[in-house]
Length: 498
Image 1: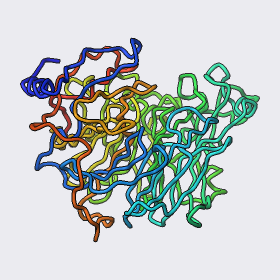
Image 2 (image 1 turned 45 degrees about the vertical axis):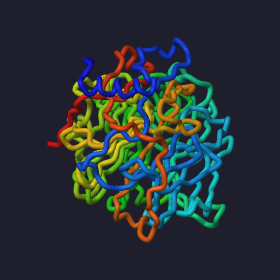
Image 3 (image 1 turned 120 degrees about the horizontal axis):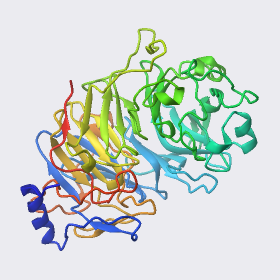
Image 4 (image 1 turned 60 degrees about the vertical axis):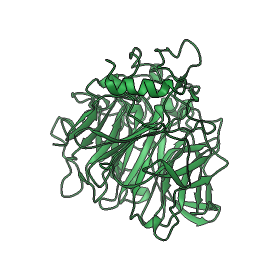
């Protein structure tokens, strides 16, 4: 990329702190680190007013911050996040926790839920972490007070082979398929599973007619082919990484990273029905080769598929953070669902689930400068802007429908709070240690804030005197592998809702 005037300004500002632009360093060289401008980078009057909730991936505190980068509330836990956090309408903060369960390794591990009141008191806790089951990644608070959670279950190789998996397509000696549970709180330290849905109940395969689930994959697009991803399956096979609930439709959307798809299932059925045909997928999108239909792959190990909330432009559409692993760049895509009046989804005979292209998409004109290959999130805001979390770089920014960056913040928290000028080390996965899994902004009139003290308390890190949006980045040489941590994306970024 060319050095711009803004980029030169940044270099000058950073030089006053002894921070120099880092050359490209391949993660294979050594355990790298970068020096970056931290904290509030940009705040303009085009930004949506509200409070931003975030949980640094390697720290035990969760923060609520105003648009000026000032902390207005915080909650302390004994656990790192595992992975999402949410602010409930009653002012309580609901948090997934990393339990470090050694029986399940694959990323996004959790196992415990915690709920804190506004003042930081632990009011509810729930465990689902043993050698057979583990909650992970994400949850979805429901209007009835229950919680949808993503869980993996352990399957023996004998079960896996009998279900029609191609043994040559398995990367590990164990398999962890996903399932969904709905948890009802029953006490301060207890909960009851009142509904569940399992991937294992909805398989179809054409690999071995002597095994279970044998059938015509292409003729059954609402079932899941164990060998459908086209690549060797890791133990963390489906690798669900987000879940969202639509009360109006009584449906659930799940991001299935292992297939580069998101799926929609029906929640308005019984537990018994969820095991049968009524529990088959209602809709799937992103990679039609998984159900043996011809079409262009559009998602690449995505995260955070969600319905755009009521009151926001595009309400009812799906927004997804399209990481781009294997493609080499990231986009945030908004999709209009081909939903019919009965709540089912249009599928052309012999064709693939639409739409053919997003109604809005955001990326960089030089796409490889915006690349967050894992974790990450996006949220449509009521003013039409989109809040984007480039998770592996710990950078959150807000863009207008036209792609203008109007707010930006770099998380200054690793395993401790950094000072301006400190290095940002990389973790064992070559993510910056200030990584963020998912970030939410809540409007000023959100019910949780009524009657609360929202007086700014402090900034995690003092901003530079004249913060500017970083635009100078090192050359991108390993987009499909482990990108240099200096990149989150700079320059003018494109995106326009049609």
